[in-house]
Length: 166
Image (cartoon, rainbow, N blue to C red; front, side, top):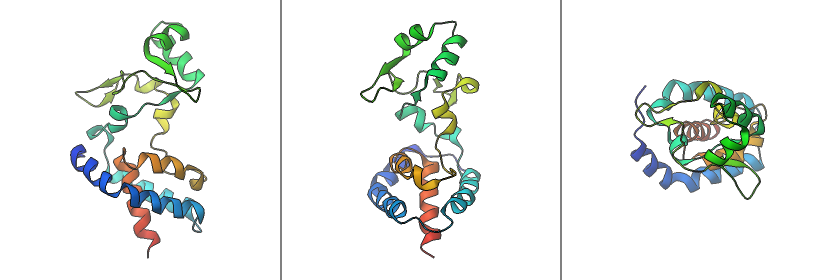
């Protein structure tokens, strides 16, 4: 597995973002038969090629949403009340979601690209990048967003495009 060159990825994803999103829109509007199985197959291939620890772009440029359960669990880890945790680390966005006040994520170790709270990380982080879901078509909007941030998502869409064009 080759390490991810984030600079090259950003250039490539920037150039192809529109094409990738258009492709995903077509898939969303007219899902091919067997899409869920295809996504499952592709996901296995993607994880043979992508090592998140050489990237961590999600932690560097995005913020997860923190659920109430996440906040309770993580604040307890720091011996804080949920309100103290929110006051120190989070803000409430326009959609009513709790988000990190800063990026990169305060829990990212920038030297190792590892999460300092990995075992208790937010559910949004644990599920990221949400590649193969039971109903893939319901996650297409997520992939449209993530294709420019996540090399695994980009690679999945690239492989899907290739397989569906055969």
